[in-house]
Image 1 (cartoon, one colour):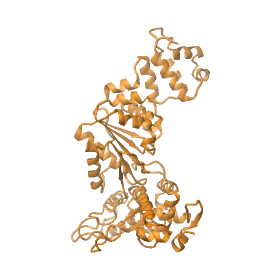
Image 2 (cartoon, helix red, strand yellow):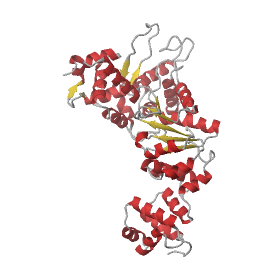
Image 3 (cartoon, rainbow, N blue to C red):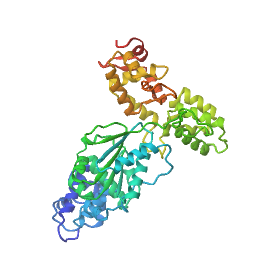
Length: 469
């Protein structure tokens, strides 16, 4: 089965590691691969020469290795590690972010803020946090493209919330091997030194898209930041992970009302009904493609604006709702958006949305993952018929305003509530007013209860009417 040449300790170590990851004994691997136990034992001890390609293929197939781990075995035959092989070709031409499939709508201010953070020498760990489907990945992609294009900086984009077989989309390409290899080391926390040697002193942007693990709980990531002084890490996450030295960039849904000029909240004279309303502009682009026969009149635009308001301006929700125009009229879509908004966002996630799973399920997970105090405040907010202030919800819950403010702040970071723009001509210094997102209101109302600090449950209406039980 082998050609007797110089022993290969590298191959033996790589084979032992792969077999251990696969959870197989030498005897089990022999039975699955048809390679003898003795040959496997000698290979792992480095006591034989170069294995034949057929032998490597049989062993790799038996262990069901990914393309990356298979490549690592083949490289080890030459006495080379995966890290060394990839380090030799690592450059800006080799490492680049994925190309966008569509334009970025209404994120100019957030993109400028992210550009500033990534361009600063002081900031090395930035996390974009927000609801599922709000556009975190698309914003990160745009910023990464700028870093790569303007600075000639390598950008390694790692989809952390995808199965390995989806990550390695083009088997055999070194870019795919690098993405899968680095991703597995960060997720599994192994080979810190070899991973750090890949970046070395090169300026690099590492993007961890959909990374739901706190940076402090990721030894490989922390080792990278400490060892590679010119490395910057950009994370997208549904949860706000507080870490000393890191920066959070909360991403809210797209505005559904006019965001500029003295008449904020309504279009300026001479403007179109979609001007300065990013959610409406985005939804109109979906409508025009789904229903090219529909003339985008002022009446149609006004109805689209109401749909956007009912769906909170969440990009993935708007895209999912637009697909129902194949079945419903625009007026029927508006009725559904007002009465049963979750019904419009159920089903498989859009391939372009950057999320995995149905939006309704992901939003439900965000709500159920809250702490009891957050759930209680959310239920209290749902029970209000109009926007509310921190003081109002504090009185309703019978808690100090400072405690309510902490919980409101947490819900804002989660993206489950939004702060409404100040009314034109309103008094300066007027307390901010908040509202629960419509999609979240339906989720909470369907549950009907909120957990209290003692672990019990009370109806949301009781929370508003009588305060603490």
